[in-house]
Image 1 (cartoon, rainbow, N blue to C red):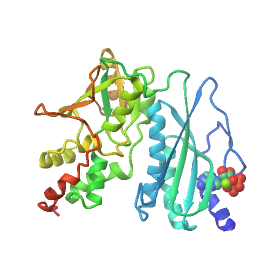
Image 2: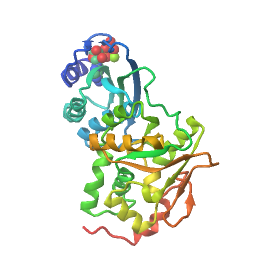
Image 3: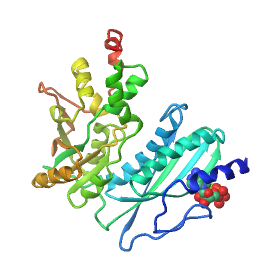
Image 4: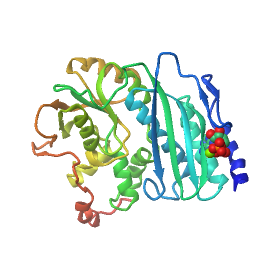
Length: 333
Ligand code: ADP
Ligand code: MG
């Protein structure tokens, strides 16, 4: 078994471009890194498990992309500049075709952000992928969850609910025609980490998080850490045409605030910095929308277009109620 994995080690050795702050990369007992002077090291880790986070026969190129993307998203949410990653792979077999494709997805995204793979571990067992991402951030400029203040605007990048809708379609819980499906599927398979936005928000945002568990749950994390409460307006949620059509069909306003896997940045900033936020969004060509405000109320609330108030994403199984809707609907193609 050792020899099999000795052979596949070459897949990692040349997978990513060399950075000049890597003194020693893959091949020894440890990697040696030169952290830029005066910067703090930011470290994050995420695991994807077959059968839990993805289906075992999922496209390996997409998996390679996503395993790295979700980690870069955590660095982005902290305002950290990504630099180095380690990769722990547990594989059922030394499947070189799978590995080649996995590393293609991983390496392409690594190249986009000049990230170098500097080590890892490879073992045999049920398919599981762990990435640890390392980045750096100037002292006292990291974007923490704590820091939101009453009166702050709440902003979110991109659109919400696309990945959740793609997952529902994939699992046969909601019918989507081919065009709609292909518009949401990339959000689930190949999320875009908002790295440049995270870095640009240093010294502007008061608090930030990336949306992995759904906007409601992740906004609650900011509120709990900051000791504040949020009010969001459903009509201001950024929605793709596909998710908008879904909501028109189902009236399910919970999908965009409770489905996970969006990997958009959710952050708060002083109302007075509104123009600065707009400028950052324009400069980076990243959509950023204000969806509500931080308040001193008792509980988090989402106001629907008809004025009804509800709790965004709290323990609501949005697809359980939709079985009937789905039975009466057929995909167009
Ligand atoms: P050790 O026995 O010291 O743990 P290994 O044989 O596991 O060393 O790994 C040898 C080298 O290959 C190390 O530098 C390690 O970081 C690297 N490596 C092993 N697996 C991976 C992987 N999945 N991704 C990147 N580097 C890896
Ligand atoms: Mg090892």
